[in-house]
Each structure stands twice: as structure tokens, then as C-alpha cells.
Amino acid sequence: QVQLVESGGGLVQPGGSLRLSCAASGRIFSINAMGWYRQAPGKQRELVAAITSGSNTRYADSVKGRFTISRDNAKNMVYLQMNSLKPEDTAVYYCNARIVVTIFEDNYWGQGTQVTVSS
Picture 1 (spheres, rainbow, N blue to C red):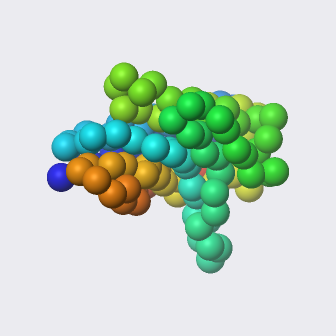
Picture 2 (tube, rainbow, N blue to C red; picture 1 turned 90 degrees about the vertical axis):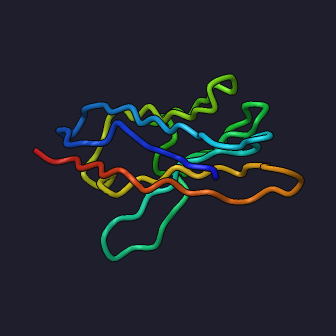
């Protein structure tokens, strides 16, 4: 069974920084793309950033230049460094990973971690 566990959320003032971490564990053959999504109250879940196994990255326009996604393939981890945080970044952040357990790739989600940006 595969699990994704996020950590690092919390309350931060506008302009501050947070670093989210996500660890994948279980019976994993390989991990393809990994990413971070977020969902604010009353809004749809949206992609924040994604990274391929070869470290190609993609960002939502709203976070470009402020957020950085990275991964450690040896540890099955993905990170999201968030700088210059704004109140509109407040949301539950979810880790996502496309994981191959045996032959086919499946989509896995973490439980979510709350990020609140407020003074």
C-alpha cells in the first residue's frame, strides 16, 4: 500500500516563507511526476507546481518566481519552497504523485496540509 504524507504547513504572515514536504512510502517500483495542488474554500483544486522524474518543472502563473518545487528521488520525497507568501495563497495543499507499483501508473494523493497566510 502506498502512502503520501505531507508536512510543513502552518500560519505565516504575508511576505513570509514556508517549506512543504511530502514523503511517499510503501511498495513503490518507481515514481513519475510529482506535484502540489491546493484548494481554497469554495474553489476548485488547482495545480500549483509539478516536477517530472527528470526534474522538469511547471508552475501556475500565480506562483511563478515565488515558489520552487524540488524532489529527492532517492528518498521518494517532493518539496515546495514558498516565498513571498500572500493571503491568496491560503489553502489546503495536497501532494500528488504518479506511482508505479507493479506495471501501471496510478495517481496518489496525500491527506493535505493547511497553509494560512494572515497578519
